[in-house]
Image (spheres, helix red, strand yellow):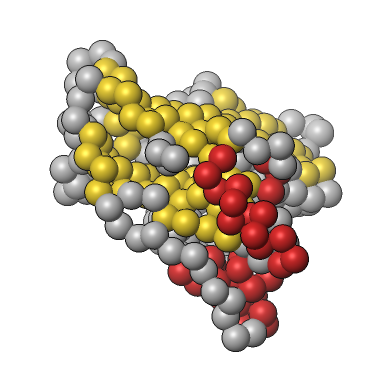
Length: 290
């Protein structure tokens, strides 16, 4: 089966890279320690952890190189999986690294391996106004047990504009976007950190996951942050909080920040929310504590 499809008027190159089944590591304990230090869906450490703990089977598809020029918006519609999108200055194209994975458990590894062929995705390059382009990805599966499956995507581009992601059972991390972000997922953390002032809408919704949103001086918003079963933390060292709501409490924060009217809407259950407008928003490690 052809693992994916490409539709575009512009060049897209399929670059063969890693095809691998994954063996278990020696101990589950050591993998669990490393889990919090993983940043990309193609990380070997994370996949060793998933194989050891969950019996996950996974395979790297060929790297996709999309010939983009100028600001690039990302639009992903997926039945499930992790998404990492980041701006990497100096790249000449947009690079997509897909990983198909199935997690049926240790006693159903054969079922998991055979189900990898049921997953498919389509990559499109859509021209927009002026020099702006959109890379759109739609991932799907024909397997009846899709809740055990997912397609992970790591996407890198030189000039990242806005990001829209719809996925399930996966985390979504966005770094150094220049435009708004609209993310909905479940059972996964959301992280949006950028060095560019944010005055566009930010919508981040997950279930049973934590949310981090960090932006620099000049960022504004009408903040509406709510967690059921978690806490809400805010840190504004580079922005003025102009007004707050009387309903604010440990799990709710509603306020006008920086004088802008762009919505900053964040929702989660059984996870914490952390927002910050600070001097060095991207100067954090894999685990954000502040």
